[in-house]
Length: 438
Image (cartoon, rainbow, N blue to C red; front, top):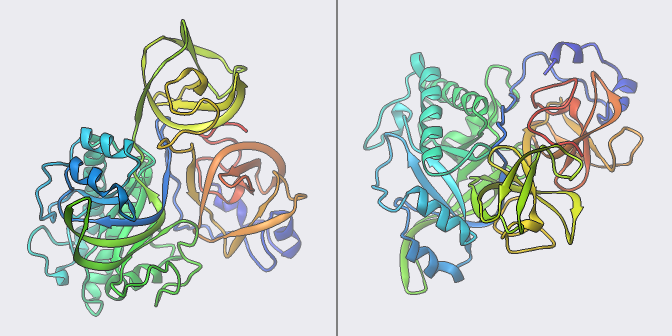
């Protein structure tokens, strides 16, 4: 992001031209919103609804038995030296099978903890090495996620257990660690999540939300066992922070529930936040071969031909040029696109569950909020806004009116538009890979 140029644009009239609300200024030169380097084989998956987490991942039979439960997402501990339970069921094949049943997975990493957290096992976050520890934790978390089939674009949540907020060394060490964790995940194409106790940790993280000294996580998952599923009105955390599909809450702790004759000890959660993205396998059903193209339309170049019966690794689905009865195209793990009409997905006319829609989310970088519009330009009507640090879930990019240093606009997953000038992707002057053109 070319932040220096933003400082040259000042004044209320300029703010209106740029798509900002009245009274807002361009962002400062140092920024807590860091760019995410998504590779071709990546997409974000969001889950909204009830979830549960448990120490040991349940068996596949147990998940099947819970089909009539109110839950459709599951938190799993993928690694970390603080992880206390064995994971005999947590394998790549289990992840694939559970995902195909329609469940979403929330990866949790339990590594080094604050000294005052008093954990039974694992290492301690030290102020002198917190940055290095955060980077190392992120690297290992990514390795563990990849081994389980959770690809780039997934959110991984670091479990920071409750600590003594009066311990100033612990507070600074935790914030430094979290910042390094976030930056490293972003550098490798993953979203950063943090699990925190509302009264013993989360307020510190929220307190540096706009600090230029720390990188800001993309989502926050708080523990507050008060029985309320509300994702707003959290003490010490403004509703304007992590406000756009960026929140989870563990509202009930250690207890058992039984469905389909299977009892599991769980914590209960409410989620509206990014989770893991996994690959799905389907086959080519074309009579001869299927063209894999550089974009989602027959107007794009063909880069290879896939024979009938070929197994495809599908990352996500998107709309594109019409082929027979559908506009849906499947993006493959190598970044190419194939028409969904010739693939063995459940629907021949629309999107197919459990496949996610192609989207890449980035934090917006403004002093307060940026306008969301009905089309790619400042002449289009304003229909809402995204606050500072909110996630812009981008499905494609298109040229529009110039804002700051760019004419690129981002179409969001709700069909609204925001200027790319305030979205922290790779470029602030042109298109950003791997985002497709609208």
